[in-house]
Length: 330
Image (cartoon, rainbow, N blue to C red; front, top):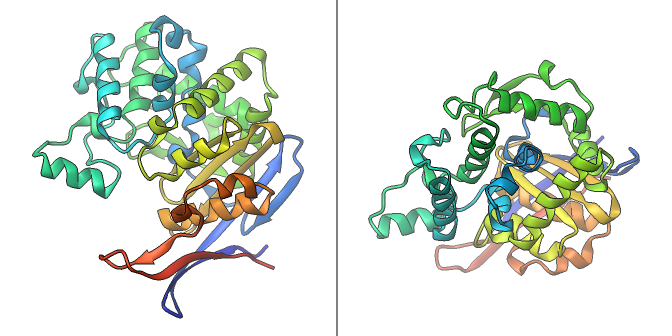
C-alpha cells in the first residue's frame, strides 16, 4: 500500500519530503482509511500516555490526592515547560512530600524553542520540572505513594507499576506485553514496540469503551480531563492542545517522539495511528491534520488555527516562502 508523502516546498521547488504510514479503524476492526505499511512496528513513545496514566485513576490515587482535571491532563502530557506546567507539577510533588529529585525523568530544556529562549532570558536553569514528561512521572509517583510501592526505581521494567501498565497494554492492544520488544523512552520509562494497526484498534476500543466498566470509566475520566484542561497536555502553539480544543470533548490525541501520533474519536468509535518515517514533528503534524480531514473531520480541522491547517515555511522575518503539504497515495 502506497504511503502518503509530506512535501516541504520553498518557492516552486519541493525541497524535502517525508514518508508517512497511517490507519484509521473503528472499534469493530473495520478500516476506514489506510496508507503505507500498517504492520510497521514502532515505539509509541509519549503517544500512549493515555494508557500509562490509567493506573493513576484505577488505583484510587487520583481520588486519594484530590487531583483536578488539570492534574490528570498533565499526567497525560508532553508539556512545554511553561510556568503553569512547572508550578502545577511542583505543587503536586510537594503535596505528596516529594521534590524534583524524586522524578526519574531527568533534566532537559523545555519542549519549544520559545520556552528555551525564555529560560535563557530570565537566567533560569532548567530542572526536572521543565521536562515534558514531568507530569506523567508525578502521576506515577502518586500511584506508588498511594499503593505503597517503592518510589525509588519506579521507571524500571520490573517495578510493579510498570508491570501494571503492561497488564493494561495487554488488554487494550490484545497482545502479551511481556513478549514485546522494549527499550527506555527518553524519560527512562519502558516503551514497547507495536504495529500501527494494533495501536489504532486499541485506541478505537478504548474510546468506544469496549472494556470493563472500571477501565472504561478511568479512560473516560482522563479523556474528559484533557478536553477540559487542554493547555496542560501541551501548551502554547502546540497541535495537541489545539486539537483538543477543536475537538470539544470528542477527541483523545497525543503526539509521540520520532513521528508517532495516536488518537481516538470517541463518538465515532474510531482510533487512528500514524508514523512519519523520518521522525519529524512537522511531518507528523501535517499527516494527522490530513488524516482527520480525510475521515470526515473537516469541521474540526477548520477550527484549528490557520498555521496548523496550512503550515507555511517562513523566513526569520516571518515572510512566507513555502508550505508544508501532504500528497495522498492513489
